[in-house]
Amino acid sequence: MLDEFIHEPRVAYFSMEIALRNEIPTYSGGLGVLAGDTVHSAADLALPLVAVSLVSRAGYFRQQIDAQGRQVEQAAMWEPATWAQPLGAKIAVSIEGRAVWIGAWLYVLEGHMGGRQPVLLLDTDLDENRDDDREITHFLYGGDDVYRFKQEIVLGIGGVRLLRALGFRVRQYHMNEGHSALLGLELLRRYVYPPEDLRPGEPPYDLPRVRALCNFTTHTPVEAGHDRFSYALVQRVLDNAADAESAQRSRPAAGEGFVDLATLKHLAGEDDLNMTRLALNLSEYVNGVAKRHAEISNTMFPGYRVHAVTNGVHPFTWTSAPFRALYDHYLPSWCHEPEQLMRADCCIPDAAIWEAHAQAKQMLVERVRAHTGVALHPEVPTLGFARRMTAYKRPDLLFADLERLQAIARQHPFQIVLAGKAHPRDENGKRLIERLHAQARALEGVVPVVYLPDYDMDIAQALVAGVDIWLNTPLRPYEASGTSGMKAALNGVPSLSVLDGWWIEGCIEGLTGWAVGDAAGTNGGDARALYDKLEQTVLPLYYGHAQDPGSWIRLMKGAISKNAAYFNSHRMMRRYATEAYIR
Ligand SMILES: *Cc1c(COP(=O)(O)O)cnc(C)c1O
Image (cartoon, rainbow, N blue to C red; front, side, top):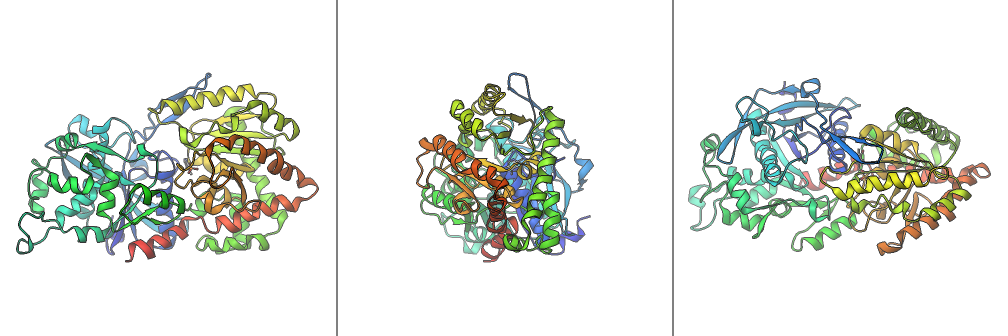
């Protein structure tokens, strides 16, 4: 079953979450979507990758919203056998002193251009395991610290062992965020100096060799995004005493525990095990996900060199059917070479762009009607805002002054479509959703606002293509990159966004969209700046379409030719290949 994948060495791409297709709920947001787009681009570019993630049988969660606007969560159980094949191999890791067995499902990602890439979904739900251990790979971002640490042992250590047991040859490891950093510890155990090269008192690990194999992408300047575990917890859970299996294969490390504590503290921090620090120390190549984010990461982690590889989105996946048809006709090689999209501004007729967008908008209008009963107006400008509902994303910024918003709408009518899930333990995020619903009610009759429940890839695809303006208003500098605005650009939808993350690179005022607030931006004045821009620039330009159709379409073409041509995952993967994987 694996023959076609193990004949050549591959880059092993580790991610806690991955968005493979809408039916497989193993993702929570941008990090997982990026992982999926990475594998899709690798498939289109014939770049040999093997992705490693958890099976997350209970998914992230399915969101419903009650009459008061409160989020109701349900497990999103999925059946791996529907989409993936069970692999025979099993390996064990030691957790709390007992062997926990890990198997895997093989999901073969089939690219639309015929490329195929293997994805291993690790699974502890095996007869050999105790009941609680069988649930380690069930809940994406569920449970407490101990549960999370067990998941990270399974992902990092289990993933490396299983790759070897299955016969994969790994040319490079890539950690998509710090969750998988324990993989480096397993490599340290594997690559120890021969006894004659050991220096007295020095640990036996061949750290340079491990660093040469590892790459790390950090994803967030938000503190909670960097996992930390107390060494008391680490020592209790990660103890290799019972790890007979692996002890046979590699010489046990000096000292007690998995890797001796002194070495671990040296690599992962004195006070607690910081997964980001561990990943930084074990990786020769480190990058942030946009230029600004790399700068911030360099100040957050002095002493490390953090490169910048700005994220991108997968062209085919995020382009709506009407725009796919348009690009196929006018720029036929765009799927392999999205750089071709730079010609959209001069090579695609205005009327064809407008017609493709009208179709995408109509599809969104129908979907909204089917799901919520609300009838949006196809001719009224529509603002879209959808992403994880959490404080730094400021989904409520648009609603900061309802009077002003209504005044603007009386002059230039517009409508709003929202979507997004809050993490089940993010009380703040859930209150935001409730408040958005209250504000939507307060605007009734003046500004139509719909909230689509259960935001997922499918809804994202419809939204980024079907709205007229894509809104993003994060609190600077917390939006490391942001990718939904890039998806919008592929569909000719300009962004109206705070200058943070990718938009610092993507915004050409009046050509690809508009900035909210200034570049140096104090966050405080953003609501006012947003209203001013909507009232004085964005909406008048949209309504000017009747007299001067070219001016709005110039923006749509700017979004495609300047941004979609660049902020795509093909460019991103070509950069990882040439700058990180080959070095
Ligand atoms: C693209 C996407 C995201 C990420 O959007 P951001 O703008 O980066 O926050 C989150 N969730 C889903 C379902 C997506 O498709």
